[in-house]
Length: 328
Ligand code: Q9C
Ligand code: ZN
Image 1 (cartoon, helix red, strand yellow):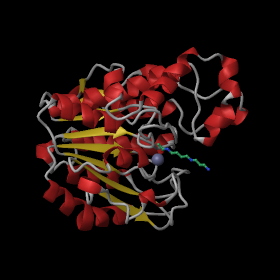
Image 2: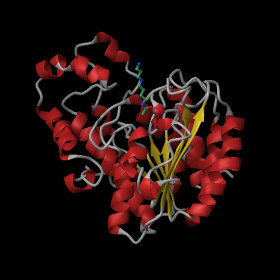
Image 3: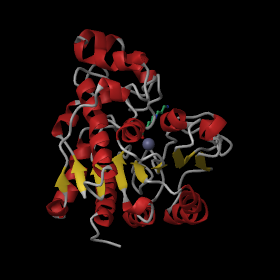
Image 4: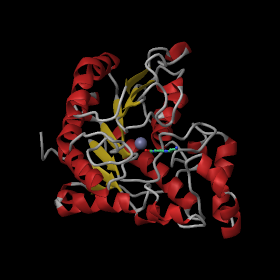
């Protein structure tokens, strides 16, 4: 089992202009607290460090437009004044940006690529990418929802390009619909995208009908996007486990993925104020265990959202214990 981490991804932090931004939920401490919990538990002794690197332009362009690439690259050369001036624009996209954003976004994406390649090539059985900023809201041509590049989407495309693996499952249990990920593969039957998320008639972020049950892919990809939209807040382990047993696992078994990538947001965790749900560490462990029965156990876990430091670190630790075989 491998893992990816770097303190350098903590340099993206919100502090400019808007004083309220100081307390932005997508905080650098998120990955630090996950790392610390896994370290305290002694799990890194049985895990191999996978060197992190920046995603390359040609990799990002497998999913994203040249325009988005240029926009994100431009942050590193912006002055503090320019950043401050553009604040309301970025607020409208649920983003904050600063000079180190580019580097952090490239490392986060490159980290998930490396974590995925190591598993896809059989060098490691499983991996955990402890990364930020998250990725699943990033659309081919738009950064949004705290996300710049769609880490898991880029990683899936790189795996398809560099290894014999074709059929990839992306299971997204972040409390928000991964609109960017579904968009990237909406017409592609080689990547099965399954998301469980709060929907509430399209009023919950990222809003609109794309996260509905009826939105299930198009063209050749029809049926290869599966949305499980929750009608309200307050979902619990039993809701997720029931959905896994009745919907997720039967579809996955039929699809027979060669690689599983989990878009692992922990904002449905009990204690998370954005998600307002109650999934426990045991719930996340159970889902991880079920998914580990697929693809010969080739599972990559990539961090997405999750904003309560205590909830996210306990949940991530429970997942890591399943990956390393310490827990059933
Ligand atoms: N009224 C992730 O969990 N909320 N992103 C905006 C606007 C944005 C969450 C609310 C939530 C983004 C990766
Ligand atoms: Zn989320």
